[in-house]
Length: 312
Image (cartoon, rainbow, N blue to C red; front, side):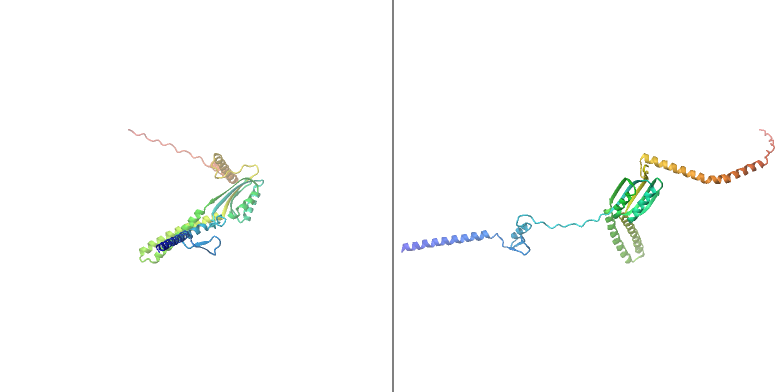
């Protein structure tokens, strides 16, 4: 009987230990599986997943840009719209030709055919200088036609970017218009004569500033729309004419020599113009003057009058 009780107690202890071991194994299994979030696939495509927990969401976000092969997906690129640059273009062309006048006519026709016009011209038998204006979008074609008028001695082209100036003027115009509108609104609510006079003066001043800005914008737009081309043509074998902006010693000497020749030529033209009149009218006038001088009676001197001496 005692042995039976002892055996029953040992059997209960073994059963309790076995039950405790099973419970511990289940606890460990559940604890190891707890950190893994439940993932579900969204209909957005492969690689697009969401997580039920914050940790799973971070992992899915980190793995989203990567495909199954481990290569990063290409992200969409945002392209900035291009800026419309405002350029003031100028060009200078020096040509030589057998006949300067014909080359000048060809240059003028080339510019006219491209929608341009001639602003200033100086043409003679040996040299010609033409200042032309061409639409900026047709400058290259116009230059091709201009260079075909003779043999190119020199060619230069420049482009000045005035985009910032245009943007600045546009911004100042908008600001000035808004400021003018505010002052006019105050003028409508003015109650005294002094306020009206003061606000009217302010309106006049701001209108003048706005007008100045509008003219500046117009000038910039004209410079951008039309390019200036200066063409110098010289006869074959002749040295090119000295430009006005040549500040060297030889340039100043050539300018002074041309001025001296121009002055001498002017004097000779004046003398040549007056000489026929001097011959026709001057000779008879001189003969008449000589005749009247001969016929004039001699003038006798009056007798001397004795002056009595005074005593001291």
